[in-house]
Length: 155
Image (cartoon, rainbow, N blue to C red; front, side, top):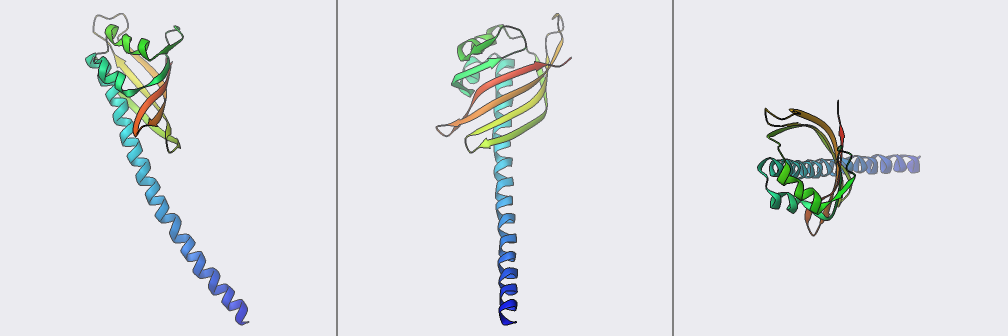
């Protein structure tokens, strides 16, 4: 009988400590996920601000050297240099981001998805464009860099 009570007491005590550990880890994980989301959301905002302000350097600084993008314009994949050069021809007046999500893939990689509505000048042939975006961000040398961009037109 003592052995049974001893085992039961042991299980209750260790079970209690197991129940405490995940809560501590969960809070830390939630905090780091919120921090990661804040950093990557700020980066996404910065990339669209760079397009709006035609700031090629700011945009280039966010991209990995091996960056690749596929847009909905049927022009195929483009590398960093081509993506940065697009800013010269950009007519984005404003943008509205929503439904941004950050999915950590590991400590140094995350998938960011969002929907964006782009506004163009009043006299533009197309005034608004809505796209779904998926981006892969990698942490390299302590900085998050966008490695891949994919957009899909929303009708």
